[in-house]
Length: 89
Image (cartoon, helix red, strand yellow):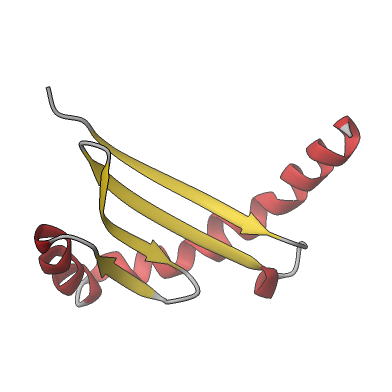
């Protein structure tokens, strides 16, 4: 069979918005073919199919939505993640 999955992550050193990076990676059969990074601000393709998708997604609403995820998802939840980790350490 074939395996397709998406991994979204928030990496942070503090709760300041500038210290947070949001990444979104798309995989097909264990190979990342396209990814988004908030520090780059756009999708980057790593395979032939990924490059074509990146061109289309960077010119459509997908890139605008992904740019907002750093603040919408990561920034809103960093405090929860930090508090949870600190109370267990």
